[in-house]
Image (cartoon, rainbow, N blue to C red; front, side, top):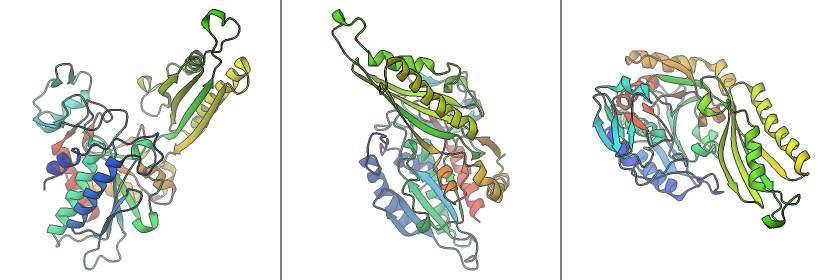
Amino acid sequence: MTVLERFLKYVSFGTNSDEDSLSCPSTSSQLELGRYLAEELGSLGAEGAHLDENGYVYGFIPATEGCENAPTVGLISHMDTSPAVKGDGINPRVIRYSGGDIILNESTRISPEEFPALNAHVGETLVVTDGTTLLGADDKAGIAEIFTVCEYLAEHPEVSHGAISVCITPDEEIGRGADRFDLEKFGADWAYTVDGGELGEIEYECFNAASATVTVKGLNIHPGSAKNKMKNAALMACELVGMLPAAETPAHTEGYEGFYHLCGISGDESAAKVKLIIRDHDREKFESRKDFVKNACAYLNGVYGDGTFECVIVDSYYNMKEKILPHMHVVRAAEEAMRKCGVTPKTVAIRGGTDGARLSYEGLPCPNISTGGANFHSVHEYVSVNAMEKMVEVIIELIK
């Protein structure tokens, strides 16, 4: 199968993860795709290919003769898609892009004016959606690339390489992809998450990340007799949101700038809930941002009474840079592989995170490399087939 054929097959599985689910994986659809992937990985010559009890797919390609003592390199991708946008019933469309707007449907288009990176893909073959769902290139493009590499190695035994460990994780999009990752079983000396964006990107810096859930307890009384008595939880929740710095949101930040992001607000007069994510590349600023939210809740408790605002903040992952710096040969190897394949490497800081961030802190150096996709978590998502094919070449060069 070609990398495109694989990708189109994988996106036929709707695999949104669900942050409100307590199961692992968080959705049964991931198990369905996981079973398919485990079977395919075994058919491609991987030893011990299986879907474990937590929804992780593992497989192992042994070293070729004479390379048994070479380091074991890991390749990691994730099977879930972001719950922020509908991810089932995807209708992918393969187009030859000649420039200008890509019409997805009568009301949705991908415009180079809004997404300037599109200009770099004139003359390429792209995969887009019908404008009602995300595409799933994040990260089924990564899976397709890894599995196509496995197929190539099976068909070309003359290519020398050390042992290769493969793992496809569930629930990366909700920050749980590394929760039950079996490092001992995986057995790699270092690894790469194939989970990046535009061709050539190499990322070993990411946000420090946390989620904050604030519950607000109100007191509901008939509006006709509410004066000096009612405490409207919905209004109080809005008051908290209004205290967040207006210029420090995702829509107003870039590069290394951190932010507060309102993911959701719900409730009524009696009870309300605010969900936030907190991000910053700098650890000290990250801690200050968490304190800001806690202090805002403490202040409002002073106004409305103790216990009105309850704030729970949970760290998701940390900037992997400090764990990668002692192992920069891993990054240099990726850069060299790209150059040998005619790709200009671009080291960029992730305005997000990957499984690799958590795994790096657990002792597995794990930078992130590109897949060729763009506009993730959006109906405007697309992936370049040319870039996917090139990344297959890069990964082969990388593990040789």
